Structures are given as structure tokens and as C-alpha cells.
Image 1: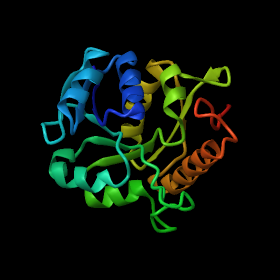
Image 2 (image 1 turned 30 degrees about the vertical axis):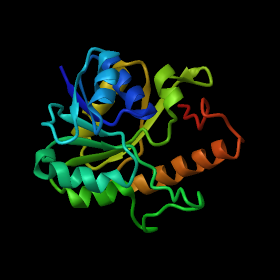
Image 3 (image 1 turned 90 degrees about the horizontal axis):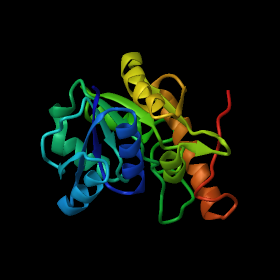
Length: 207
């Protein structure tokens, strides 16, 4: 059985925890607030704890805002060596909602990979809203999780959990494609904020 640790209890964290549980994984949920972690964990029979507790998952999902990535890298460091670490963030300038805050030739995922070089970093879940992850459906079709990463075995491990939960996966290739995925996620958020699409919608990928 694959073990998955979710750091974060927001809508995205809870939706991804639900996917992991439905996909047959053993789930641990960590958050700054133990009560929130406990409530989210109780909904799916998962273990809970606070950020800083030992990680039990071989897959670690960082369901946190972009600024928290540096804190997690500092808190866990070498503990993430050989772990499959999934960055779901969109590094948006929320003051202006008009730009990404990472360099044009980089990404949030690439920054985290550089900070924790022993981790097998994957970019995923950032191009889907929480609602379409929770329902597993978008426009009458299974929700497609786009991902990118340099370790094929790590991507397969994550993909197997996602597909076991009834969703689909589209592999965008190497981690350098995270930049494009973050731009796509940003554009989708802009469209939702401008009320051009709903937060229950988004971009669909059809094969």
C-alpha cells in the first residue's frame, strides 16, 4: 500500500487527501493547526499531526501557498530525501493578480527542487480546482491531473494513486515543464476571478 502525506488542510489539501484515500493509499495529514488536521483526517480515517512531525508517506503533497514552500524545506530538509514530493502551488502575485513571482526561466517547483536536492519533485494538481478534484469530474469527463517531473518512477507512483481513484493523468514531461503548468494554472485562476469560468470548471484535457 502506498503511503501519502498531505501537508495542508485547505480545499485543495482535503480534495487531494480524498483522492489518495479513494486510490487505496494510507494517508497522513499535517497542518500548523492540529485541530484542523484532525478534522480533515477524521473525514477519511487518516492519521493527523502538525507540521514538524515525522512524515510517514513515501509521497508528500505540499498543499500549501507558495510562500510556505521555503518553511517546509527548512522544517524537513533531509527528511525529504528520496521522497516523492508534489508541489501544487501557483506562485501568483496576489497583491496585483497580474504576474507570477518566480523568474521567467524558473518555477516554484524548480525552486523547491533546488532547496531540497534529494527529493524527487513533481509538479501536479496546480491546473485543477479543488472542486473538480473532489468530484473527479470536469465537463462530464474524468478530471485530468497534469504533472511534470524528472523521475519517471516517481511520476508512475503518483499516477497510480490518482488513476486508482478514477481520475486521469497527463504527463507533461520533465520538471522544466512546471513553468508552463504554473502559467496555465495562473491563467485559469485569472479567468475564475474575472468570472469568465466558475471555480467548479476549468481547463479540460481530452485524449
